Length: 139
Image (cartoon, rainbow, N blue to C red; front, side):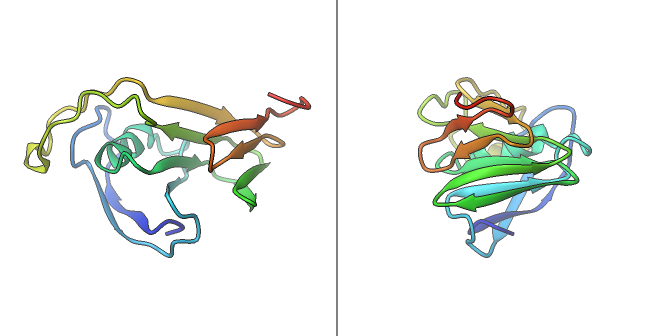
C-alpha cells in the first residue's frame, strides 16, 4: 500500500515462482519501493522475490510484526522488536524468463542483495545502502 505498486495477492510458497505475487495500485508514499508486512512471521521471502523479479526497478522491503520504519529524507530508521529486510536486485539481475506467460515457472535469480536490519539500524532508500547497523556508529 505504501508504494505506487503494492502486493494484493500471493502465497508464501516454499519455492519462488514467476507470477506468484500480484501487484496493484498503491498510495505512492514510498516511491520505488514494494513493501510486504508480517514478513518473517509468514515466511514471505519468496513472495517478495517474485514481486521484484517482475518489477526489477523497485526496491523490496519486508517489515516484521511489531516493527516499523520512520523515513526522513529517504533514510529509514528501524523501530521495534522484529527485523527490517531489504531485497535489492540492483544491476545484478539474471535468470528471469522473457515473458509473463511463463507464470508458475520456478524463479531463478542471482545477484540479489539482502540486508537484514534490527531496531536502531538505518537504511538509505535512494542509494540502497546501510547507513547504520544497530549498536554501531557506522556500517
